[in-house]
Length: 86
Image (tube, rainbow, N blue to C red; front, side):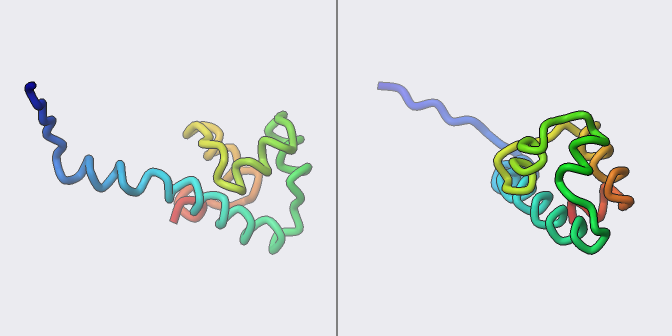
């Protein structure tokens, strides 16, 4: 029986271990920002031309939007991508 090991540079391991958390942080930040600006999920969905359920799934960390969608979300919320992902 042979065993194969793969090498992952430290920065890759960090990215892999944090990738689940970024979806959660994005959703938490959207939930924090949206009510302050009196914007509903429906408002964002209409601007992005997507289903409101999709916005809900992003906020609940169940969907991983593309970079372009993250930029569109930031624009719809009147904030920066940096603010959404911090």
